[in-house]
Image (cartoon, rainbow, N blue to C red):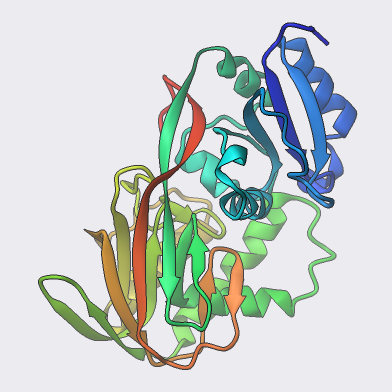
Length: 307
């Protein structure tokens, strides 16, 4: 470990990536690039006593670990605020992919030498009893229904990420064909949308779940949400998209998102999620979704191309 290197605080999920990325391997790799590395497990008090000399916080894990760590950071005092570097070791890695951050760990850490700080917005939802925050997406309908269904599935036969995606997309195909449409009202500054819908997603990044790229142009640092609405009349378009994903094609999602900084939503159904967490007590009340502009800074390569 080089004594004069920049100090990096590593938050590591030891079970991410099927446990193949060990503490020893990652800390050695970070140190070999000239950094001093302080380690914390995501399973313990991950943000205890952050050294004031810390250059940035590196999060090693999947989207769930990234969200958990960021939410804890947002709940801390300003003295804990640091830029965040991502080491994507999860199954989907939608956050890192949306930012163009490579999954190759050597390449990723090497890029920190001349890094760029990317502004990253955070979504806020009020009206459900307590204020909720999201960094990926917030929505209703097909995706939270998929989450509920997969929780009940026996996944022991899934050995790889590809196996998990295959199962998820197969289940989603069936749900998309059968999901009952739900009355939904979306209130914007200049218009009101009232439709029978099967999916509404307020996107902060381009993808969710098993790499469903519902808004290819979404930029988490542009100060706007990308809102995707799939009406009952557009069910066939959604079915075609999911079928092509399941067939290992690379389809484009053809339903155009609209962009806004805030909105109100009333959904008369029960399937609701905030990032990777289900909301179990939503009562159909009107929710306000607001954008907290540039609340975070993410370490990225200047040459990175989001996908």
